[in-house]
Length: 146
Image 1 (cartoon, rainbow, N blue to C red):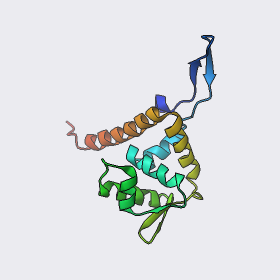
Image 2 (cartoon, helix red, strand yellow; image 1 turned 90 degrees about the vertical axis):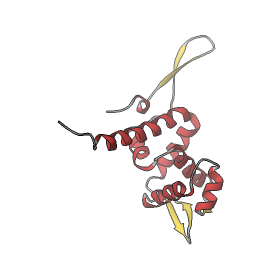
Image 3 (tube, rainbow, N blue to C red; image 1 turned 60 degrees about the horizontal axis):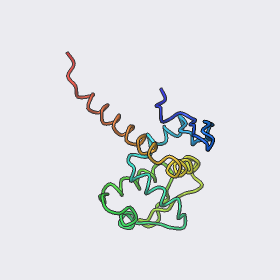
Image 4 (cartoon, rainbow, N blue to C red; image 1 turned 135 degrees about the horizontal axis):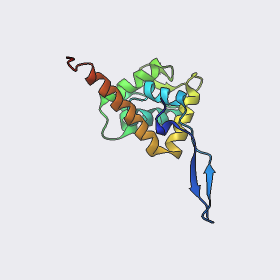
């Protein structure tokens, strides 16, 4: 089932007070699956977008932390970089990570950049919703059944 955030379309008021359809970023099922399987946190999305924006840049874990700013632990940044490498989005070169624009997932990273620019609040909500549902599923596994 598609979440509300993963639906297409919106409306806005024009100067004359009329409502008209706005071509809006689409949170497709494929894009939502990409977020669910590849983007574990907002900081992970931001890190991936930093690397995408500077394709010539290869970062170490420490440099990635500097780019992200405070609030992200070194272990988290390393985990995100390793996940992105595993998914084929980054190449590792001598302990440094570089974005792979030729990855089959690159179009979804482009969509991530568009969503981050056009609908950042919705994107953040979707990322947290998937993370929270994963946590709930894990917790449910330990419930005692009568």
